[in-house]
Image (cartoon, rainbow, N blue to C red):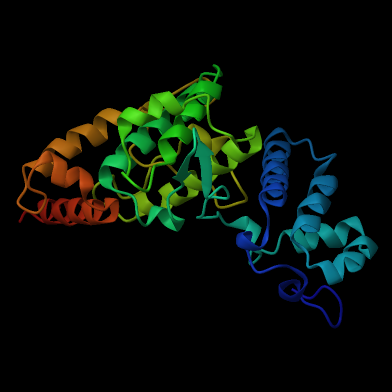
Length: 287
């Protein structure tokens, strides 16, 4: 979409989420959520303000004066360009490492590419608990802290579930940094679970998170996490995923591909899910 006769939207803005620092990313996330809420409540009075804040974070420095000169209607037109990166989720963690009690802990690589099934099942369970607490409008601070404590691991030893609880309350993370970590995992999870349409159904059910706000227009659905019943507002209550993954872990341990509980836990989460999806596909074809 053309902005002026000589500048396109692709030229105006940075290449993607990685070009933003954590503070800029959080401002974009926060105001995208505000727009989502405004649309849901049909209260659009501050829509233009949020759009301007979002675009300000994403525009290249040399074009900031161009942004200031544009009227509100032009900014809204720019914002609705679906090709712009902020309408799509990010797949990396803005806080790559932290130090606790003198030990450097790491977040997983982009797309959780280096995460074991053992790490994933505890991480996903912690993630689902945050959604449950948000749905119930109970205090989700503790569950968010546990999610972040589960996310980081000691590279010298790998993930150890026994080290999660002692980390809670010690993480040197600001509230917005925790929120960004949580949001990143949500988008990564959408892609991870999308690899298994037969294992989790042809299309994941909508969830409380899907119906009540996420980054941009492409809101993630959370497979394996939603119940059948809806509340009086039409929202589906999130379900705790820990038992589901624990049961699958035992099933894997009995297969030749992942012989033994420990071996199954150490396997790549992508290898595990691809295997389970292939097995589910064969089962549905009657083989």
